[in-house]
Length: 529
Image 1 (tube, one colour):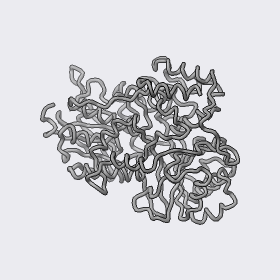
Image 2: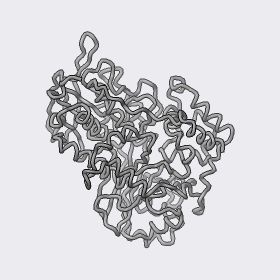
Image 3: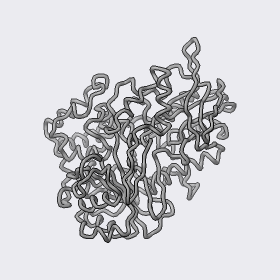
Image 4: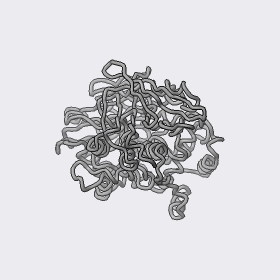
């Protein structure tokens, strides 16, 4: 590595975890001056999809991330050097370890059947044909699988098993999603096979991920001079190509406060560009209103990628991911409860204290609804007498079992009615409703990264010949790794920074459970049990 970073500037397009991680790696590992880094974000808040906000009258998170020790090597590498906001001598990674040691996950009611019956989730229900089909998928190379769907590889019996219900709701798979992505998930998280019914491999943050991860990372960056520019939408990028095939970003076009602007890049400057967004055009509803489904790509993330993709055949094909909203959308909801009644009833049913049960899935729900009660407080400043619950539904166009209308058309109050019906608590609905706020969120592209795809649909983190630019986020191609994880964004950021700066730093390896004989035996035992 040369001393070029001391005289270079870096422009990071997008303020999600990929850009934040890249900024940390530029400074920590690349010797980049923090004041030479600009993070350009359209929204008024950083963190991208890792959000958490609200007041005691109504909190909201669009999603919740279940982290894991073995698979999240790059994320842990990042967080080992980021101090918590409460104590600068304690890293975020250490805080997560301590929290999970105190509140380990051991779900006792992973699956709920009709009449609130707790199902034997340890009985995965796989038969010989299911195992043969699963093995067959694992044996096929991705080039052979191609753009085929999960449902092309399995029989109806597999999709009715407890195993599939748990796997799909843990990771949010639909039957029509990419078989390649499912294969990658099987290989990446095979260590979870023996503990799917308890989710004991799950690691959580002390608070929601915005408060526990994003805020400390941002604080670390700002202390080193990194400039966050909010209200900035990057609309286009100029590239140049030299005779030897070297490509460079020369100019960024942007809109700031409705006014056009540009950033000019010299040969020593860098541009790291986040493409696509799983939470683009997410819309919040309320207790009294259903959230709108936006279909016309108002968010800038998709539009920028579409503009870039038209410039080069190896910049990806965004339409493979954003062209089928009805196959990528689902809806989540956050309950804010100013009474412990519902939390206590869920404790009695599940046998789990808040923060120890992970997902509870109502297997026969028409919406395939799942919920989780986090340890309180889950938000910074949350009062002791306020409690939260998060949930989501995969089948948002199906009529509910108790309200008789699709989740997509339901108000927060109606979602509460549906939930209480599955919990067998309809008799105390009025009592619970008077002290509960429900905020649903419709997300048109939340599982779009799982869309069936070919090898050409996602750009490489560092495209061929790229001298000063890289792509970041969930829609880049990182062989063997799995999208829809924080790890993917952080690993991509590490590849981008180390590759562009020519750093001789080792990137933590991708965990392979089958390489460990003990883990492989446990997996085999669980699959055959």
